[in-house]
Length: 185
Image (cartoon, rainbow, N blue to C red; front, side, top):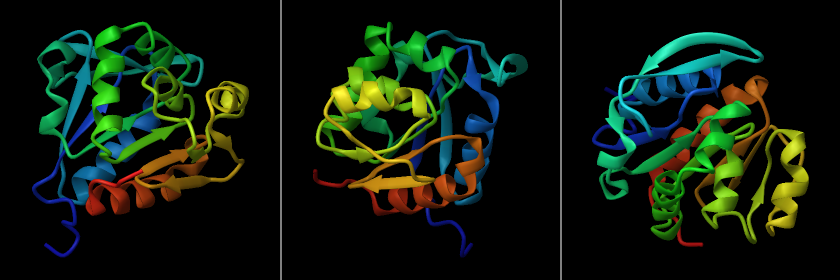
């Protein structure tokens, strides 16, 4: 299959209740279309509640409970946004440790909208050029990132975007970076 650039790669999607639905579903569809094996990882087993902006959306099944996930088993990490999702994950020590393992191993990470919030706590933004939902600008800048207002920003395997409208560009760059693999920062 010519489009299977991610065949043999396992990608983790870290999320919890309150994720922006399209920021999880559209990238997951793109990853699977590129041949990746994708696992939804969450602090709780069962399923997690998506949101469509301020309204509740669909439920998504959790493939692996965070306490049972090994960051070493994954080639890349996707961090969807939504305001509630990353804010809740920032309070989960295991979630921050999981993200930090990707940062420390220089594995590619893709974060959209509010998703980069968790990267601050995981020590993954200092000295990095990135974007996000505009309300995170000050947080990211204060944590040492260079924040820019662009549809998609790539910095040595770190892919960031601002909002759902950026998903086509985000997904394309995410697949490209995940295909390249580890990046030394």
